[in-house]
Image (cartoon, rainbow, N blue to C red; front, side, top):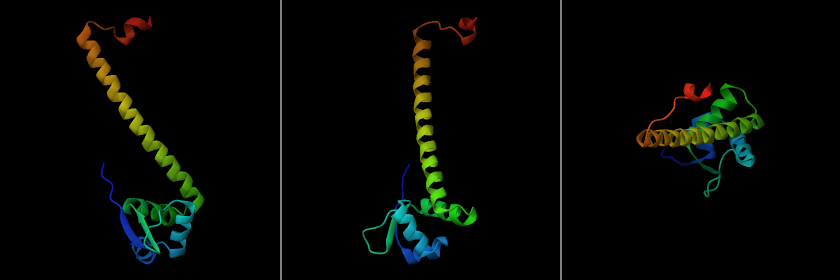
Length: 111
């Protein structure tokens, strides 16, 4: 999955995403956005900026709530990746076992 990062001024970001410059500064202070090396600018993913705007304006969630939601989202994405990896490993093991000889179905050994 390719990530696109943009550098955008507080002013342009506020105009584009409907957030105040003060909100953006608070998001940076809370670690929800990354400050750019360019003064008064943010360096982040456009999707992340849009997500923050939706959570804050459309859903009316405060900044502390957004922090919790984003942490849960990161955890969910991590768990989905781990599940995909384990599913792939289980599939690989099943293929290996099928090629090695007969296997028992779950019903055969449960009773």
